[in-house]
Image (cartoon, rainbow, N blue to C red; front, side):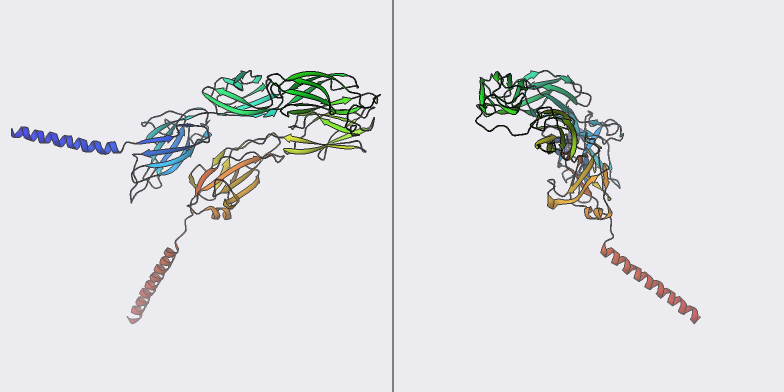
Length: 566
């Protein structure tokens, strides 16, 4: 009986001990949660964690977060099982309960692994966030064993179109990136699938592609181009502009001209005017297109406006050149006759290297005209017996914006405005300092090299105490840097090194024509405060030194006195 009672007591003690052991284990269950669980590259994500090594009054505990495309578990290690990753947060302080809350930005690239050649760009797909502890060593080192895992889905991808406005039938280039790799591409225009005219029909291993499409028949205004790759979609807005085509574009008075219009309003009445006189009226179809004919009125030789305008005030002006002799009757136009000289451009905007057709009339018959783009002479050519010329030139490289094209025969001069559209340099990818890291002085900034169509590039670098980089927060600004890196000078390093300030930095590229690319995303970093001996310690050491000297002198004096005494 006594043994039975002892057995029951012993069993109860074991149960209580096991429960006591289970309670702290449950309380220390490690986990991390992320919100949201999906997003695009560059989006902000919150990470919350609990159950990790807790800091105490005598010892602080830290952790580090990795972002990787390689799947692993809590029995795996960084750099052996997970080799392709980006450090998204370093030096995370774990509070007295072993918890933390941090934010990170979904990176564009994974290139923090030990092997510099083992990296990859982030594209749409599944990624993993890993947490590891820091060991209590001097200096602290990372324990590579994974302690917690969370899953994140990169969605979307992005596209860029060029041009983003124009008439029906224009060829548009689509450049896509950050999609899933090796997936089929589907292009839709206002929710209707359209053919890819040329280029890629699926993404490459980096989730990128380039292709072209033709803008289908559609009305004036905004339309949506959608690219679908796997489960991700990206959109871009294209603005359809009215266009009027004449056939022929020149002829004598009395000639019959066919008119074809696209990009006008849906089922809208369109008036066609020759030199402000109505010559035809038509109603567009559901796609905003129409066709008409008219007879050239009896007017003198020269270049005349042919206008088409619908009920929604969508307007396009084409040019028609009247050749031949003076009219036998007065022109029916109620407006004054055209100016002595006139110039027409095939388009008023375009990119460097594109063809531009310039038509002129009213210049000196059989004379020589000089065509200038700003101060640069592009061409010289002879006019015909009627003072008319047609020139085809290549648009030169220059800074994006409005430029003046002048045409002169020495007596008559005409000027027209041409808007140059330039492709800015791409965004340099920031490399150093790492996001959220603490760096020593001199601070070394490093970023990816980029290339631009308009010659060599330079770089602008900004460092500020505010992520908006307003004037009051700017602490460093370097312009026209030739190399893709910069190390702070001694004076700049002293200004930055205070240990507690969070700095933001960004960089952009500028091509040889002065076209500025977009700024990179803002990186964050701290600068370690250089070691300096405290003032109190300096005085303490000086005092101790004085005491030592006094003691040594006193001792030597005593010895000297003793020597002479004896």
